[in-house]
Length: 172
Image 1: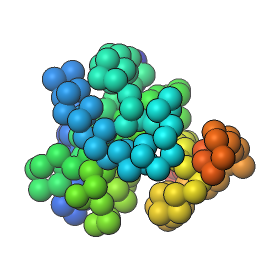
Image 2 (image 1 turned 30 degrees about the vertical axis):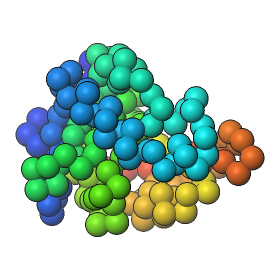
Image 3 (image 1 turned 30 degrees about the horizontal axis):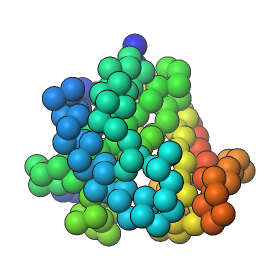
Image 4 (image 1 turned 135 degrees about the horizontal axis):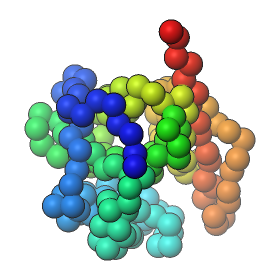
């Protein structure tokens, strides 16, 4: 079972995270398809792009004991979502995280990452991946303290997945 220390929704700026339930899967699916539509069109990666993922896959993940989904709310309106996967008691993976196009460019992803990390104060390791050619995404994660691990995976000509990790040292 996945451990989450803080159970109340936390807020930073205008962003609040709210734990999603099975009832939210349809909304998450619609938002995910919209948020990843431009990347799906650009790279035509129908096998791995979350925008091409069927609703059943989101429902399946939502039911996993090691997974939590959160709605990213801006002024109490859905602006995106994020999925957290527990790798162990102190290590977590973010996959995927997305902000709707109408809400991008306002710093909401940064705020959502900060809130998300605060929900797991026991975490010492976070990881995620993104498309190397998408410089804005790489910049976001690097700005938030994530560092490239050196692992890269070329999926097709002009599309490389780059892996990131963030180590957190807790002081007593």
